[in-house]
Amino acid sequence: MTAKELSRHGAEPPAGLLLAAGEGSRLGRPKALVELDGERLVDRGVRTLRDGGCAPVLVVAGAAQVEVIGAVVVPNPAWRDGMGSSLRAGLAALPPGCPAAVVALVDQPRVTAAAIALLVAAYDAGAEIAVATYGGAPRNPVLLRAEHFAAVAEAAVGDMGARGFLRAHPDLVTRVPCDGVASPDDIDTPEDLAAFTRPDR
Image (cartoon, rainbow, N blue to C red; front, side, top):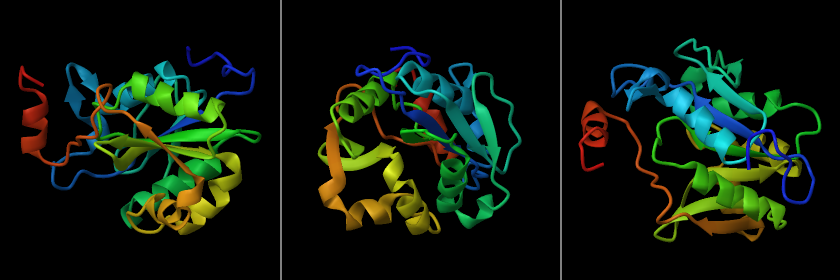
């Protein structure tokens, strides 16, 4: 499904929300601007969300000002307060009537469009919240239905993101195994980036 198509049941597709505001202190530069395989991580994340079936796609930016083709950039002046502030800014910027959103992180470049599509399929099947799992462990990305946006935003403090809300409401969560189609490995340090650029990765 392309980013402009409707979901299988004819409803509006979920939006994509890429959190990309951090300064990358351990990496030494904002992660959004890091290039991998000749592509900035922010562009890669937007492409992944669009190819996985999300529309529109919003990018929450902070430490680095970015322009991204095919996405709406949402500034987060409070980015130093942690990922929770970016999640709140992104959820608040979603267009009226948006039925759901897939939240992804810019520093996980091995999250694929196939993984996003699995979350979208879970949404089409009626999931309230869909969480990607790897080896049975919940990680990112996460799909949230609109009726939970306000509660998730309220619980998003510091670097918690949606984690606190998800732990408090396990009954709402559908786990979506993404082993074999994606990896949650992230880029936090120069050593991480070097590992991602090895020929065997």
